Length: 309
Ligand code: AMP
Figure (tube, helix red, strand yellow):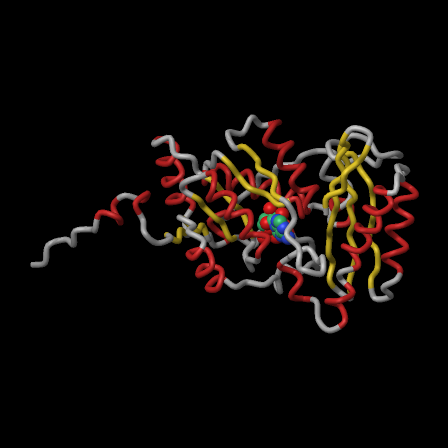
């Protein structure tokens, strides 16, 4: 009779792994998270929907510098897609993603099937009121309800000390920060800068939808924000005037339709009349059939304002 195989040391101790472990169940992920906490390790978490690109990688690199172990989740969350949105066709590239994460030195990839996150009979929703209804929330009803529900659930499963989010999704970041504060979560939210292509287009998993002329036209979101930056640098402080400059850039691309453009207070997400403290310029537009979002951060620096794209 064969004796039970003896596991090598690195397979017995989840923190001595030489390769990335892929976890599919909430129960095992929770076990790993719990053990990290018990051992006082600083677990860093990067939630994603996969189809990974440099934007995601920059979050992961930051997490790697600050944390060990690092957990990345890939879950295309059905609850944050509205009817008629791109849930079915959203790019799913797990094998390529896995190889990239391994190269980046990620410790755990959490890739649960939908039923692990939303088992039969699931009934709970998490809503950050007010902040979730405007801008993206107005154009995509129920979107942020889906986002906050899944992010809180993922936090409960992974139990991270730090979680990394891109400023690319500025409203999402703001809402998650509010949720973490309101619910006294033990997870610190870390905001990371927007990663862009050389021509300014913000990296997005949805950029693969941009075919033919749409790819070039899509840079108009960046160019419209850059127009605002130039106006601010020239001394303009009036939000309505800044938005005129933004819209003028957008209409120069006939296949691009503006959904909304707003200059808002970074905390309340309410429109401002003149620049003050910290603001966002938020823009959403359809490029052909593809909906893209982008933003610029405006920060007061003494008498002047700095615009980060
Ligand atoms: P997603 O997979 O689209 O849900 O994005 C996962 C995380 O990556 C979110 O926190 C996004 O804000 C972030 N992210 C996506 N694109 C970028 C980008 N171009 N620059 C920085 N962060 C990004």
